[in-house]
Each structure stands twice: as C-alpha cells, then as structure tokens.
Amino acid sequence: MNGYFGSYAVVAVLFAIGVAIFGGALFVNRLLRPNRPTPDKLTTYECGVDPVGEGWAQSQIRYYVFTYLYVVFAVDAVFLFPWATVFAAPGFGMTTLVEMFVFLAFIALGILYAWRKRVLAWT
Amino acid sequence: MAEVLDVALRLVVIVIAFLTLPLIVGQTEHKAMAHMQSRLGPMYAGGFHGWAQLIADGVKFVQKEDVIPAAADRRVFALAPAVALVPYLVVMIVIPVGPGLFGADLDVGLFFVLAVLGVGVLGSIMAGWSSANKYSVLGGMRAAAQLMSYELPLVLAASSVAMAAGTLSLPGIVEAWRWWWLPWQAVGAVVFFVAGLAELRRPPFDMPIAESEIIMGPMTEYTGIRFALFMLAEYVGIVVLSALTTVLFLGGWNGPLLPGPVWTLVKIFALAFVVIWVRVSFPRLRADQLQKLAWIGLVPLALFQLALTGVVKVLAG
Image (cartoon, rainbow over all chains, first blue to last red; front, top):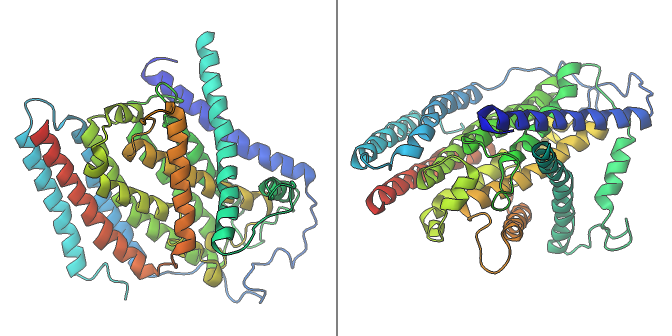
C-alpha cells in the first residue's frame, strides 16, 4: 500500500466500507421492519393537511446569484492551494507576497462590487 | 502480509471511531443541553443516567417501516442519506490522531478533505428536491445557498494554514505547528469553526432544517433508518469538524505531559462541547443574516488572515 496510488486504494476501500455500512443498515432494516403501505401513509406530509398543488416549485433568483458568486470565488480559491505550499520557498519571498496581494485585491474587489450592487442583501 | 494487516487495522479503528464517537457526542448533547436548560435529560435507558438512550433509539429506528412518499423521486430519495453520510467516513482516513496514527497520509490531504466534505452537502439538496414536498424544497434551497456561502470562508481559512505550514498533508501540518500559531492563526481558526458549524447546519445556522417553520426541511419526509442515518451524518460531522479544527489550528497531538492521541481526543471533545454549547446559547439566524455574516463578516476576515499569514511568513522566514 505504498506510493501515490496505494494510499488512494486505501481511500477506495474505506469508501466501499462506507457503502457497505449504508447497505447493511438498510438490509437489517428490511429484515426487521413491517411493510404495510396505505395510500394515506404515502401522501406528502404537510402539517396534516392534504397537500395542495405539487411539491416541486420555482424558487427565488437570489439563490442562483449566491451559487454564481460561490463558483466564481471558489475557482479562484482552488489556485491558492498549490501556491500556498511554495510561496515562502527560498528565492520567492517578496515576489509571491506581492502576487498574493494582487490576488486578494481581486477577490476583495469582487465582493465589494457584489455588495455595492446589493446582491448580498436579501430584500 | 504484515502491511495489509496494518492497513486493515487502521481501517477497523476508523470504522469503530465512526460508529462510536458520534454516539458519545450525541449523548453528551442530550445531557449537557438538558442540564443547561435545567432538565435531567434521558435518565431511564440503561439504568445509569440514561447512557443507553441512543442505542435504544437505534434499535427503534431499525425496526421502523420504510415509508417513501408516493410523490417522491424514489431513487434519489433512497440514496440521499448515503450521500450525506459516507463522505464523512472517507474524510476520517486522513485525520491524524498521533504521530503515525492515521489511515493514510495523502500529499494533498487538506485539499482532499475540503473536496470530499463538499460532497456531503449534496445529500441535503438531493433529499430536499426528491421529497416532492414544499417544505423540503424550501429547506433544500436554503441548505444549498447556505453551504455555498460558507464554503468560501472555510476554504480560505484552511488555505491560510497550508501557507503557514508549507504543506497540504495533515500530519505535516501538525508537525510544523508551533504554539505561537495560536495567536497568529486565531482569526482563521474562528472563521473555520464558524463556517464549519454553518456547513453542518447546526444551530444557530439551522435555517435549512428549522423545525418550527419548515419541519426539518429536507428531512421532513424521512422516517426510520434513513432518518437515523441523516442524524448520524450530523453527529459524525460534528466529530469531523472538531477534529479538523484541532488538527489545523490547535496543534493536533501537540501538548505537555499527556500522550499525543489523548491530547487530540481532549481537544476534539472540548470543541464538540463548544458546538453543543453554542446550540443552547444562540437563537437561529435569519436567512439574510446568514448570508450577511458569510459575505460581509467571514470572507473579509479570512482574506485578512491570508494577508497576515503571508506577511508574517515571508518577513519572519
């Protein structure tokens, strides 16, 4: 279990164990549970009143905006990780520090823009 | 052969921790919350201070009927608890408890942790959407918006530690840790912990599951064992968040007198207690307050921490 792929093989085994735990729990449940479905039992639960209309609904656009913001900034943040491990290596020093402030300025400017455009306010 | 046995033993320990630590945290929550609210909490099950309450709950859950609403999207509905639960188990493989005591040392450990934790979030969204229930859809949407917003400060705070340590490997980070990182990384630690709480949808960030207005949100339609697995995911999440905060910001197994693994566990349980304490102490945040806290509070703080880390590291090193 050495080497690059070896450690990921262990991760894969643990993932399989996790799936087995889930499957095992459902299997034991299947052996022990009663199964007596009635139409009433299978209706959607909405405070005891019969549901009106269907459950899937449109939702506010602002949820979409937050997702969009997240995608933009998270893609930026991904580039931080390879940089973070080497930025203080001998020979970089000041150069990478200046780069970092350029990067931070971009993100900060982006958030400031979103804030000024009142995207972050809820109403 | 010895090597395979070694790996098998590590995996067995991880699975045991995965199945027992959440129960201990859950029982602690029952009792600590009860005493903070001048109640006794469970007293009957098992005889001594209700220690077997959660085991009794498990026995009950496993015997309950598996109701899937007729209107629901059956496959997605059935799969959602697994998507919420399994990532936390997989993450536990890289968390070091002591020197050499971890499932696997991945070079990109921190990156792996953040990527896999992000998958767990999908469980709530899948549950919310597939239930075909108005409350569930609302809860799923709120969960999605909240998790998106808090993922960014979480990632930024974590990368500050990676900058300080110069590595992404979690054992490597703990080895590089020095006591003066506590004040140096303090802002990042708070941001990470708060954003982590929000990712777990724990109070005061439990807007998506707010039981008094949208009756548990994505989990409204879940009963029996599937609901129990969602609950287990929440408590494993507390353990994983506490463990990650310990490893990244509190020095993991570093500490005087006691052996390393004991220190790790002490720190994990201290943080888990804080999670419970916060639940009892603070009222639920509104959706707009949640978003404001993330984007106007935590993200700028995390950016400040990044700048501080960079400057100190380059000037001092």
